[in-house]
Amino acid sequence: MKFSIADLKKGERGIIKDSSSKDIPLKLLEMGCLPGNEVQLLQLAPFSDPLYLNINDSFLAIRKETAALILIDKINE
View 1 (spheres, rainbow, N blue to C red):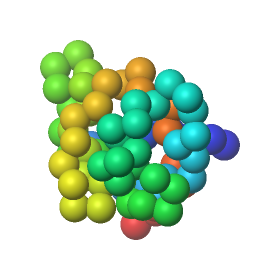
View 2: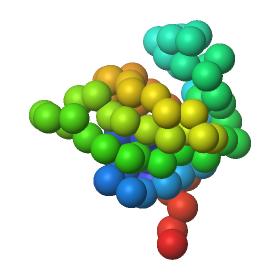
View 3: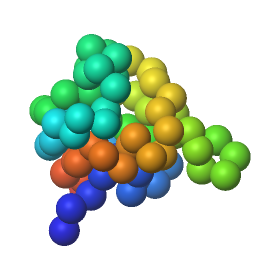
C-alpha cells in the first residue's frame, strides 16, 4: 500500500520514497524533502491544512495537496 505525507497522523514518522512529481515546488526539494530523508508530522492546522512537519531537523509547513504528492514508507514504532 502506498502512503504519502498527507496520510500521517500526528506524531507518526516515515522515510520519503518519492518526491519526483513536477507539481512539488523546487523550494521543498531544496529544504530537504528528498528520498531517504525522515519526516514526522508535528501538528495539523485547523481543517487539517497546512501540515507542520519536521524533515531532517528542518521545520516546514506544507499544504495537504502538496503533501499527498510525496510518497513515504511509514516507520512502525
